[in-house]
Image (cartoon, rainbow, N blue to C red):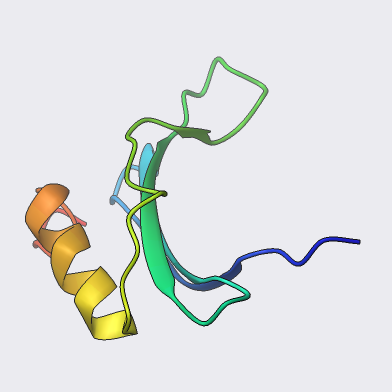
Length: 78
């Protein structure tokens, strides 16, 4: 069984249509990804950006970059 990323924070927009997950990888590095879900799509969340491959040494660095790249994340809209 392969190790999986551990989601350490998951934040949604007020309408529940978008989400950002901050995660820790098995190697101890951090990352984030932005997701979207549409009510008419039964498949649930889908990644909508290519942020998941970015690597950060700290959780704070990953969060700061997520706020920079995902405009709604960390704003009053979330």
